[in-house]
Image (cartoon, rainbow, N blue to C red; front, top):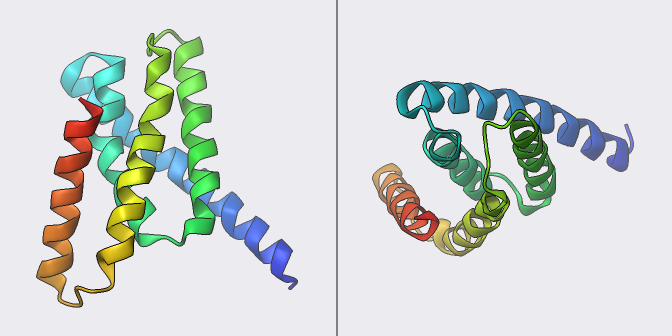
Length: 128
């Protein structure tokens, strides 16, 4: 299989899988908070940040497109009313790029887990 076709299929699979996981986590968050904006920033944010850190940088664009598509759909359904939420993935991307830069310096599981938890906490502060 050619390299371009392989990347396209991997990106398509990631786009569909990420969309389904994101929407599932959003529904759970919406059930807990009854607010569309808060639900988008609660559980899906951790998934987004973890995948941004763990996946290669070339898969960032399909994830961004999937999330912006979901935001657009939720805006059309009037479950999200603030357009500024579209900037949320970009803020997470900046945090993930910084964490990804130092991620490989820590080979132990507990070190990486601590770094991931610190990144989620810092990202949450930036989102607030």
